[in-house]
Amino acid sequence: MLEVDSKELLGAPIVSEQKSDEVVEQLARINEQLVIKNRRAHRIWKTIGTIFAVFVGLSILLMVLGTVLFSANLSSSGTMEMSVEEHVIEIEEYEEE
Image (cartoon, rainbow, N blue to C red; front, side):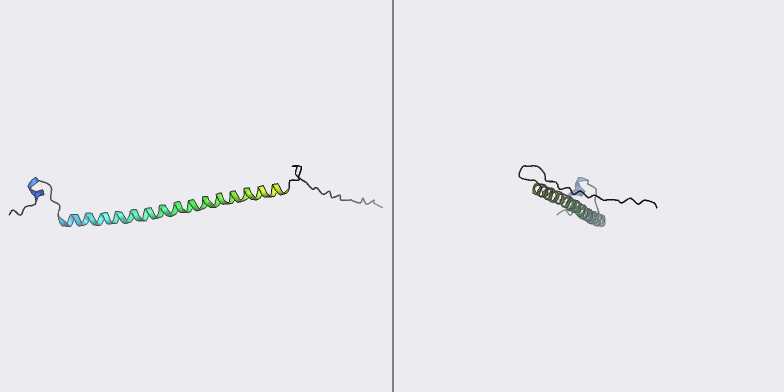
């Protein structure tokens, strides 16, 4: 039989084994770089999501506490009880003798 590759018969350019190995190595390096980039991006988005979740959680907690404290200060008539203490400081006037 003929020991000629079909690519040679059709006139396709012949790529040597050494060149294909170099291409495979370059693709492997590019793949490693993409894995590192994706891992870094995932870590950044995870951090941003955590910070956002903490912010939302604290906001909800503050709103609930504010509502509870506000409703605890309401009297039965619906007006807010306010206690104001008046402190009077008496100042003695000294007369010069």
